[in-house]
Length: 257
Image (cartoon, rainbow, N blue to C red; front, side, top):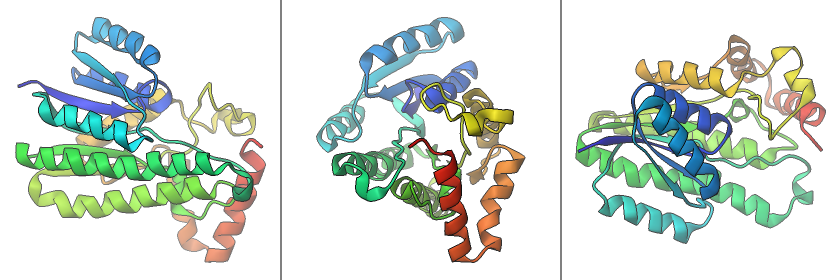
């Protein structure tokens, strides 16, 4: 039976870079994103470049019924997934009360509920198979409160703590769990000149290469970039009020408004 790595949010940015990094290593892939027309050419290109099997499925993970249908397809299929990469995610910036509630709900559905449900469904399948690996994508924002991106930072704090807890729970099942906490990543869709000036942002490809190497070593918490690792530690040295004041000042200065 062929084995596959499943990557959500695989149509662009870090998700696409991780899919390419895995294909380069000879991994068969199942790519998941909202838009089929974005996934199909990616699947064809990766197949041609690396000689691997690349399947794709358009699924809005923020819609529970569609996610249920997708999980049922996976359960009834014969393809064995031994690596789950939960990269799909939604960001939000600005004053919380000024956001549309539908957008905030969508963020919670994708960043928290869908990720957790995928871990539960595929984690059970991996346990039956005798093992596997899960990589959840959090953020550097997970380490401190995040005023002016409060929902996003809180959702990533959930992903960080959930993943670390799951890692301990699943050790005896042979399932390895890691969590990636990148800093800002260069993106054509999210151009923040102040952050990108002076190469403060790593490219998606740089983050993906660092990540797959860290997965080989079964690292629990993966933080690419020495500067980012120092920033992740900094809230431990600050009082809670100072950490949230500092995070709020940074977010107001750098996040698009």
